[in-house]
Amino acid sequence: MTEFIVKNVAFNYSPVEDRVGLKCVTEESTHQLWLTQRMLHQLLPALTKWLVDAGFGTSQTKSFMASSLKSSQQNSAVKSKVDGSADAGTASAQSHDNALDRIETQRELRQKDAVTWVCTKANLSFDKQRIRMKWESEASTDSYIFSMTSIEASHFLIVLRDSIKNADWSCHWPEWLPLIEEDLPSNTAFLH
Image (tube, rainbow, N blue to C red; front, side, top):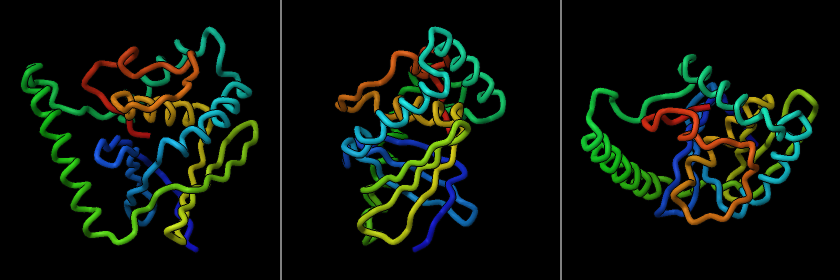
């Protein structure tokens, strides 16, 4: 069994798969993981409970999250989806073209890879400072470790929530967890 420590992750909802794709960067390489709605429904209550226990869930949380996201943006944690010099029509067309390209790339990856890595088991361990998630799949002996502070975990959830905003998934997101468009310009996407 190989364990990979995830250093960076980008989210992308696939309407073809009806799953969230996670492009995870480790020390060695980049890996494509998939998160299903069923697994998210199992993870979300445990993650939000831990965050509330860590001090999130208060009336100040939403403004704190906005501030932390802006800080992340200044530290290049937030990457632009489109060139800021493009007009709105061009940006929309580029965004649509990018979505089509991503769908086609996903199809090509599925054809190349015999094994699709879908998270089927998640072991969570907590302490006051960090959460550690170990994701496993029935189809692979590889596992992926996400170790995050509470602020990193909240960013993880914010971006995950944003990635599925156009999906027909019924999730119970906490009120204190802001949507990205509430706090950042519309042409940004977050990379944890």
